Amino acid sequence: MPKITSLEDLRKIKEQARDLTAARSGGKVKIIIGMGTCGIAAGAREIMTAVLEELDKRGLRDVVVETTGCIGMCQKEPLLDVIRPGEPRITYGNVRVEDVPMIIAEHVVNGRVVEEKVVGRTE
Amino acid sequence: MLQDLSQYVLDISENSLKAGASRVEIELCVDEQKDLVSLTVTDNGPGMDEELLSMVVDPFCTTRRERKVGLGIPFLKQAAETCEGFLRIDSGKGEGTKVNVLLRKSHIDCPPMGDVASTVVALMVGWPDRSFVFRYTVDGKTLDLSTDQLLEILEDRNLLVLPEVAVWLRKYLSEQIEKLHMGRK
Image 1: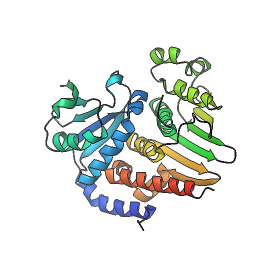
Image 2: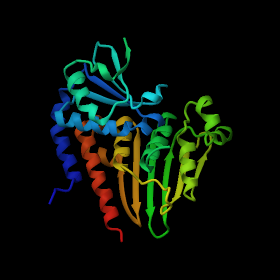
Image 3: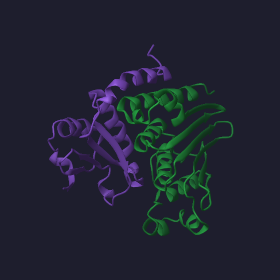
Image 4: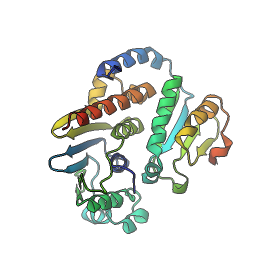
């Protein structure tokens, strides 16, 4: 029988996280997901879930996940921005759950922009 | 229109948070016997005066003139009314806002509840500096979860946004919610 998730598991996560968070410093990569009505309708919440699961799977702690409202590109939602320190802000559009592992592996980890999904670039 | 009720809950909670609420209470209730689904989002935000309150349910007034209210409320109102239900907003300037939606559960157009756990996670990760109180009731059996409860264990708000905490939270809530539904006859 599969193990039931419990509050006890959260305690364990906390114990493991305590020493690691101390090592966290500046220079974090930021991922921003559009969570306006348009984003939600297009599946932004599912993108957020996929991002968090991928970061967890890869043990990436130096990535901050944030949400934002409608930025006026509703037809290209779900939108996902990646900002690496000192690099332009890249906006990916029409992001699908299947795109998330690639964007994280290529861009977030290795710094290579996934050009075919880019809809905006802000210096 | 949004796909399911949990997406509407996320959307109206986002309204509360963007308006500046520091605390948002989400209460979802499924009552098989009364054949009802009820969604309530209560916030301690700035509230709305009567003029704004009368505008928020009208998509043609709200979308361009008032940026903090979108199409979400009119959509949800329509979804509720299609299912013999209603959407009601109680608010006053400086008094916070309460959005309550009631739907007839067995109505053919009643959207499914959807992935409630992901909605809670998206809110807690997206707004780590705010406080959430979540309550899910199925036929009188209740699941409670709040930011305060999580912080009692984590003791550090910064840990709330860790991916492993988010993944844990989603799994935990999904399982608990499934349990509530399974116990139903």
